[in-house]
Length: 168
Ligand code: ABN
Image (cartoon, rainbow, N blue to C red; front, side, top):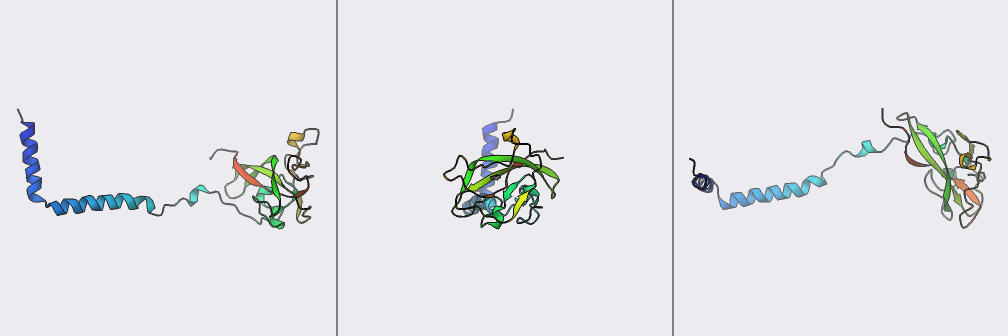
């Protein structure tokens, strides 16, 4: 029968004779350095973000498909940010728009920006999926600033909430 202890001892002695202590320490050091550097290497994460083509100050921009209001992009804000001095409404109207870059449907939240005065620039009334005010939950001709500090609507944002359709 093989003497396990003796075999292991012979193997360890052989390794010890063939390698120097400094060499072993160098290898361990290199391994530790490699392990710490790997997470820092550049990794292509761009694929995760959807492409977002189009002119954000035009009613034709894909995210505005169900919008009723002044574009915040024309009023000192952006499709997802209110202009300075205004407050984003907590209440909102939800639409579903197709991104031409990947042909997928995205859920868009049309939060009004409240305060200051009505912006008055870039009015859009695309209204896809809009229903009469008798169904308020499906109507976009609504002042979503009613629950905010100011009920004055300055402009309307179009924020991507998520993908409505799974990848094909
Ligand atoms: N959601 C924009 C809006 C505000 C007030 C009146 C109509 C539409």
